[in-house]
Figure 1: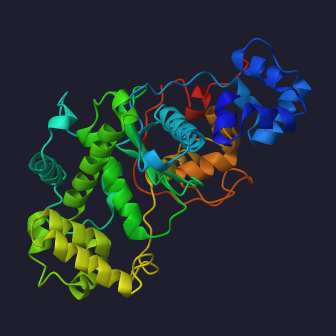
Figure 2: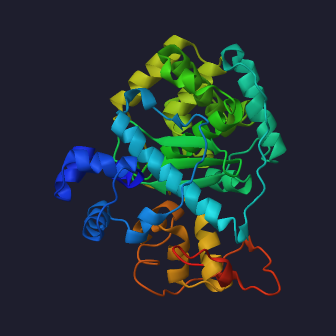
Length: 387
């Protein structure tokens, strides 16, 4: 009940009023001190937009490793709680899917317990370069950042954050020791989304073992964000590959390179400053000239470049529906979530799970887990409330 309330951004008082109960009654329900009547349960399901069976889901704990919210310092507590619940639902879906399909093996380096406060910019540059080498990306532009992350075993989802100050969140789940990234679908600039994904990748690589208490300290949080930002810049714009294509450090050159590298003009200016190609003052003049061209809010090609979309969760669910022997109803019963939430988080077309059977096409990867000789895939689905 608390999960659903936080996911919908409701206070206890607001939810209590919506179901015509007192706030104290709702508090007792959430604390497990009282049980809602069947009528009250139906009202809660209707208001919270979840199936009645949702309230009988078993507990799912992804662990207390820190969750890194991009721009968290400017976000409200309610916004963070709402987005955190949607991240938890993405992790629940993924964890259930891994019962039946093999997702790509996690392939991220573990830097150990290095104190992030001791990390130097050169070490962050090296970490990004080593990761590109590990994933055989060379020094060229990355055509699809989300596909690269998913191939490395990172589960990526999108949903509407309804919080302009938050662009993404990342977390290493203890439930399956797998990294997760949830990105906002509210912002439609492809270059912004790619940078958000690379920023969260920086947290997953550099800050895997950071104590969550660091996120509550303003200076330490700013340093964590700066490091993830520097990593994203180095990962998307490797020094040798990017610099070799710079005829000059001008807005016209940056504009020409933007579609190829999939990075904003503003990010290229910052990158040139970080690499010592231009001074702080030169960077300031470039930003001023960019603003004079009207690029502060919207840059050239922002409307033309296509926003990348996650594929892994969508392909896994489609695979189960086409080759795994599952029906839509069986999958919904196993996930225990509202169809619309599953569709949004898994990147499925609207209505695929909520409007009955639909035409689906099989796409490559992942693959089904082999079933026991005496069992079919459908038979391993747990049925709530029965044997």
